[in-house]
Length: 260
Image (spheres, rainbow, N blue to C red):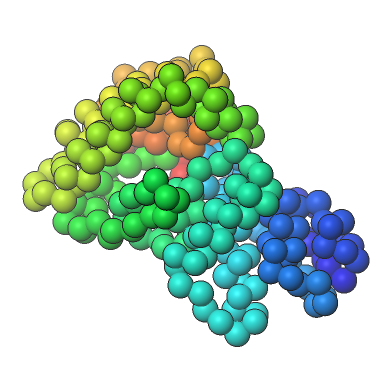
């Protein structure tokens, strides 16, 4: 009845027999008990690497199955359904930002509200090109289960409130800088350094000696700032690099995969 093709090939008769957690949860939640389906999934970049691939999969599958039933749900509905499935059905220790990014696309600010809702505001494009020209992305070479690091951060929320408030203030400052005319890179780099310093203190496992070495190598060769994407522990390192220094940073990190 169901053929799910991912890093495995599953052929099962009941939704509850599906191993892929998101496929099982989405099909079950949407009530696809009477259809026969084949779902094939491919990705160019590795899973468990801090790029939000799990949530992108959930949003994409929801979108495909709604379309199969003849409707195109609005972005907010796709994001909300994906958040519900990952947090309440699969019961993973995940946030809500990846699902919103995947559902909306584009260059946005997301405000999360106490009641569980969210507001998405499209960022001004005035400095987007400058920002994109200064970003470099490197795969550290190792992945991790994000929920393990994320659960430690959740467990530390009460004693991390000051840190989290400071990081929220950094985000608001960055939004303002990116919306103003002129070169935002020096100020964004300063804020990114402050943000990474605080993120490292949220929980054990966010960083490790290998990640610290990659960060220091990038900084010594011209990167203004950097941070590990996702919950931490592995995956992708993002650097903010002035275009004239990109070649030097890439050469210094030639043992890592550079993703344009």
